Amino acid sequence: MDRQEAELEYVGFWWRVWASLIDTVFVLLITVPPMMAVYGANYWDAGDQLVRGPAEFFFSYVLPAVLFIVLWRKLGATPGKMAIGATIVDARTGAAPSLTQCIVRYVGYYVSLIGLFIGYFWVGIDSRKQGWHDKMAGTVVVRRRGGGTRPVQFEQKR
Image: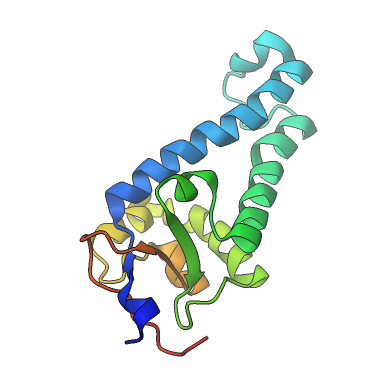
């Protein structure tokens, strides 16, 4: 284990819940105003419609996906992860995740929803604190050690 690895720890379940809540607020601040502009106050009365139209599909699904993928690729974190001092890295090397890893990780969010969010809860029992989306993409979420979980070890050097 080198010095950099010894200074990092895996980010556990509850810290990631906080990051997700912050990210949810971030996404809502970006997506709700344009949705209200397009659909008006009746937007909230969608009934049983999953998607009202192309604008909702874009603002609810495409825009958040692009934002998260770009933020992960360029900064290694979303605003929520940044707020808790966490970053997403390649699980084998500790390097920044590739574009492919970022895309797979985002798609993995939907896979993690299967079975009442079990893929997300997996973070709480996994030794490297990986959810199913992390395992699919080959990523881990790490931060500077603060006395929490065990230190990080990468299989290969950068």
